[in-house]
Amino acid sequence: MATGAAGLPIEVHCPPAILSFIESVKKEIDSLKNFIVYPPNPTRNLSASLEEVRDMFYMAPVVIWAPELFFSAAVPRMPCPTCKSNSCVVSNGWGDPRPVVDFRQLYWIVAKRYKSRCPGGGTFIGYDPDVMALLPEFVSLQFPCQLTRKGAIDNGLLWRLNNEATSTQSFSGLSASLDEVYKSAYYR
Ligand SMILES: [Zn+2]
Image 1 (cartoon, rainbow, N blue to C red):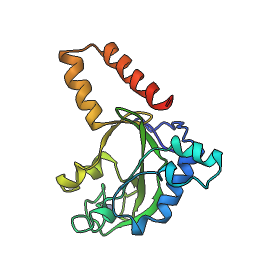
Image 2 (image 1 turned 60 degrees about the vertical axis):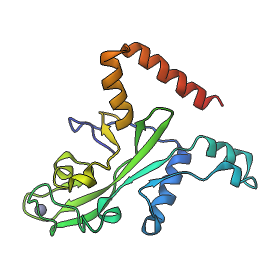
Image 3 (image 1 turned 30 degrees about the horizontal axis):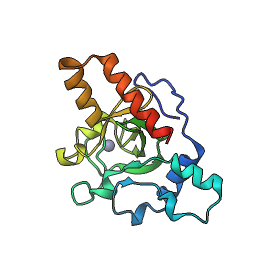
């Protein structure tokens, strides 16, 4: 289970169709060309059952945060937040998927977990702030969102909130316009 900022357990409901999509992406991780994975297009799956096709319309992109796989030239192994070297770090499974709020819909982010084998080392997740600070800047800048207690918010949306809500528009106005966009995306 994921933990919040204070280390408290948090409950995030990930729809079964998205969970199984994430599991299929993990199985193909070695052949993925991009760390952002888009779900299959429903119109190319007309032979699937109505239920399967309906699920596809509710699918969402998934961001795989595993810098040693997608930026291996710059990050051959993940650095250790305890001793700062990368020789003690081993892979330790996956964290739970987290929903990311974006302009039109949610997307999901899932990160690998690691274990440090040096004295005092423990387990950590790929987007742990102490680890992100040790990555080359061009790699850490690829992380598309800011984490919140239960999920995350897309950097582009956050930029808009920071700029527009403080200058031209109220928070409640922005909230209402986002709500409108979400409803139009889900009621299509
Ligand atoms: Zn270490």
